[in-house]
Image 1 (spheres, rainbow, N blue to C red):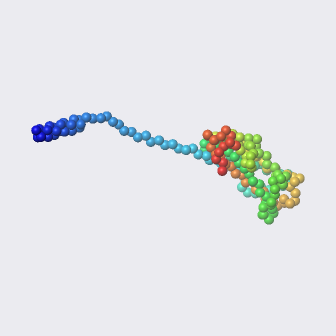
Image 2: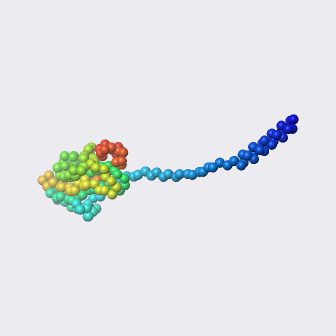
Length: 187
C-alpha cells in the first residue's frame, strides 16, 4: 500500500509539473523616463550714451565741468524666465590725488543729481522694478542722466573723478509675491 501511495504521489507530482509548465500568463513591461528641468534667472545690466540705446556708454573717462549733464542710460535685460529686478548705484568721488573723498549723502546730493525712472520704487537703497520682466524684455531706464550741479560744485572738486557703480539683482517672479517688494530670495 505504501508503494501505491508513493507511485500515486509521484504520478500526481508529474501531472502537476506538466500542467504548470503548460499554463502561460500574458504580461508586458515598459519604462518611462521623465526629465524635469528647473528654470533659471539671468540678467544683463547695460549702460548707454543715448536714449535710443545705440551707443554703448564709454569705458574711458568722461570729462565734466560744473553744470554738465552726462547722458547715462542704465537698463536691465532679462535673459531667462520671468523675474523681478532690482538695482542700486553708488557714487564715489576721488580727489585730485586719487583718494576717496568722505562725503555724506546730503553733500553728494548737492553736487550730483540722478533721477530714477518712474517705473522704479526705492526702498532701503535699492530700486525695485514695478513689473515682472519676461525673457528678452528690457526694463525702462533706472536713470537716463547724471547732472553735475553748477553752483554747488565748487573749486574743491577740480581734478576729481566720479564713479557710479551700478548693481542689479533678479529673482524669479513665478510663485514669488505679487510685486518685487514682496518677493523672497533677495540676497
